[in-house]
Length: 158
Image 1 (tube, rainbow, N blue to C red):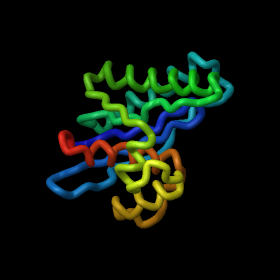
Image 2: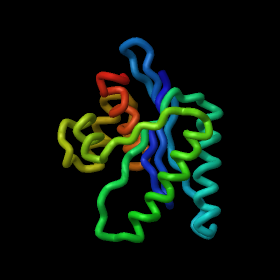
Image 3: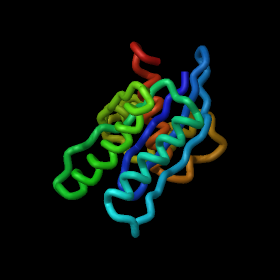
Image 4: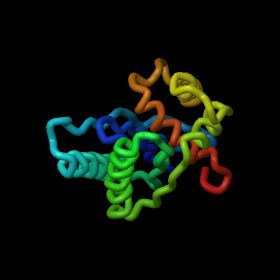
């Protein structure tokens, strides 16, 4: 089973693809998608959609696991995040890939054991769980790998 984990964002979206065969879990690839900031909002959303679609076509994941929206006092930021999530969810739907959403606290609880864990704690645990030689270079990519691990940690899916 291959899972595409996504930590969505309009300026930086983290992604991580992990594969599970039997009881072994390994990282296939991870990184970030950064739409050029000079692009208009519709073009940035299109960029995200296209890049996520390319990942799906290249790695053929069985499921898309994405971090759900969180409540924010900054309405503009929350709306932008929702738009980014929407374009990513649409890419999954257009590829007929099941999409599962997890709350940030659920992801942290699943990977660290504490729903209030810091991003650095998540990054450290992702490195250890996946036996990476070094910490993922960005918090966005380690968060995306954590989303994928959260999916695999669910008894009915993993």
